[in-house]
Image (tube, rainbow, N blue to C red; front, side, top):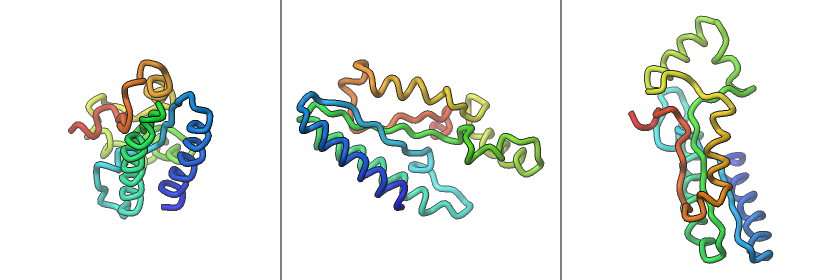
Length: 146
């Protein structure tokens, strides 16, 4: 909760304060997760709730700061290759089993790579998203669609 909710809130508040003071608008992008929308059978209740709170912050600030021409959006990935998830990409029985469970729900048939976040992030910080605020963009290969 501290890292996901409080950290997101404090960062957004600090950035928003600066952007409002500058008076030129701006972009804020928070990091959510597919788990904000889906539960998980293995003790992830606090994580799921914390990421749902990040999406609530995204919607609320998107509404509050629109008058200042500040957009607030979030990206919600599923499993992506990172130092935290590196074990899931290994060639072990445990990793293969966990990966198979995730892949059974990903229509695109693979887990995310870091470069798969570049497009959503570039969109959300570019002029192309100027009329887009309070939203969460799922970067999950269709995981939350099915």
